[in-house]
Length: 285
Ligand code: HMG
Ligand code: MG
Image (cartoon, rainbow, N blue to C red; front, side):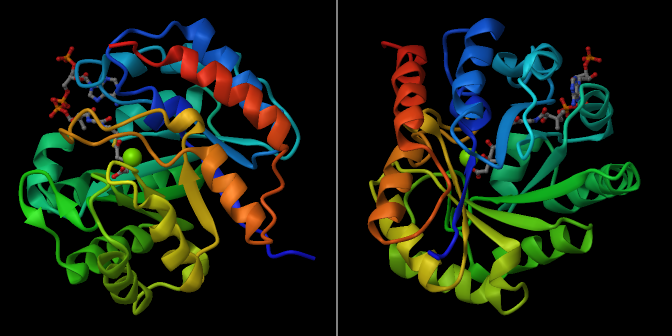
């Protein structure tokens, strides 16, 4: 049997959060409905963040109320603080993703807090998520390049990833937010993180601004990672990372992995339908 590699779908969250035009809840649910039949194990549906910071995600509770429930499919959501987590739990999230930054500049821009303040803020969130029996995922952003502080040291990524793991995250997703990191830099960053955390607890989250995401995925595969975040239709960007383009496209990753003889469990024809629909949601500007 082929080696299994999970594609963790982030389009409805990371993909849509940056769209300038307000996408209706109905369109978000149509997208999630098309993704729900593709065979994903996890879809990141929305985020319970401050609507003042990310207006596009203001309908998080309505989105979660409308997602189709299917056996074997979990819905993950982002939560930056206890307020977000409480709303996420009430809305029926299966998995909660908390997020921190490897650089101080991005931490301030994305979370209005230092890295240390973020960890303090996340501690009670993690405790609540775990005591409620939900799964906790952790993100580290800007793992090679920060739009404010420049190059990020691999040791700093390893430290933040370890701190998130200590909070009880079952998986740490390494966010190459700007899509600037090259395969050599990704390898050095992964080596530092793998000194602290085994590959089966890590995921790769590559934005594709520089067109290097697939090569970076190959580096991560080589180092043993088996979970990759991707966004259908290549939707996305990050509102607090100027210049960041979309995540690597789910369909590109799925075809690439299939060609390498790896099994993603995805139905590529249904994925094509989701891709076509996702592209209609993109701003025309
Ligand atoms: P703050 O302004 O310091 O927070 O923001 P605050 O506690 O002072 O609250 C300000 C207002 O927001 C208050 O409302 C709060 O009630 C409300 P007011 O009293 O003024 O009417 N508020 C909330 N409302 C709903 N849900 C909440 C919530 N929290 C506060 N959870 C805060 C701090 C963390 C809240 C803010 O910075 C924030 O929401 N940041 C999130 C930014 C974001 O979503 N970024 C994109 C996701 S991360 C990403 O894309 C990277 C990733 O993909 C990996 C990668 O690529 O690197 C994951
Ligand atoms: Mg991202």
